[in-house]
Length: 354
Ligand SMILES: Cc1cc2nc3c(=O)[nH]c(=O)nc-3n(C[C@H](O)[C@H](O)[C@H](O)COP(=O)(O)O)c2cc1C
Image (cartoon, rainbow, N blue to C red):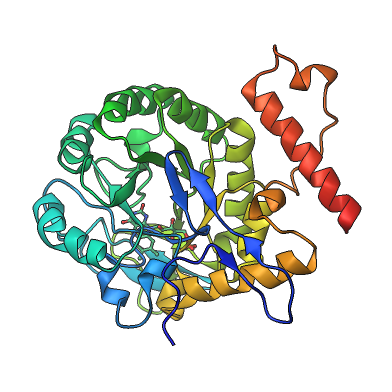
């Protein structure tokens, strides 16, 4: 039986009521919050024989750069306890082939598309967004400000708040689609980086990319990753990524997409409970290619069982319910205070239901 193309209000089994899963990322409405993480789902078309990619909230493509890239020398992948290290180094087909071949194929599949863009300079990102910003059917652009595996234009270069803000100010006019900034897992820097992105005009953030890790094989006296270090992903990073996600949520008023170790619907609900608007499924797709759809399918029953009819009512319920200040709803309150007060009210409602 063919899946309905967009699943936004999925009826759970056992006659529990349907749950409205729709979420908004700036100008982009997603039918549901489950999206594939960049670099872990190719350009989407590779998975079309296994699943209906249009059923996902969105497909985030592999990061695309101006010129094609061959990526780093091997070894590029190593398994570690409860995770994996990768040092792909942004191997990708480059702007021209992405625009001519990959994008039309993914568009024809009916997927909601978020294109991931990577650049070594603000100018390269302007070039990419200038070329792709008006492409029909692209709902958003995720700017990869946080690749740990490249010599130039990676985390170290971009983790400077002023640079992020200025770059986003230059990118903002180039598209009306959602502009999403993907941040590194640097807890101490996250609030400043997140606020800089918001000030620069980003519609949303992704928190977070992989953590820098290392693995040594003493039996061969070598590093398991050719470059020495790689990006750690998978269940090993989930508690760390969850904390980063909550920190990003607390820092800004724009939506945050959670990423890091989401392996099932419970993980996804945890990220949403700490305030994520959407969740990205990455490493899971290497283990079970249909994993993102399984996460989506598993969201509804636990929400319905708790009497939650709209995912929006679940969002942020685990953030510490700070006592609402009398001024919070008044005209002088800041957007961040108002958002905090709304989250506190939502948390209190859910705690009463529990
Ligand atoms: C093999 C591999 C390649 C990746 N490539 C990219 C990429 O091109 N761009 C990007 O922004 N993130 C990339 N990532 C990071 C993921 O999008 C995701 O943020 C990270 O893996 C954490 O999520 P996970 O633990 O669910 O995998 C890659 C991750 C892996 C494992």
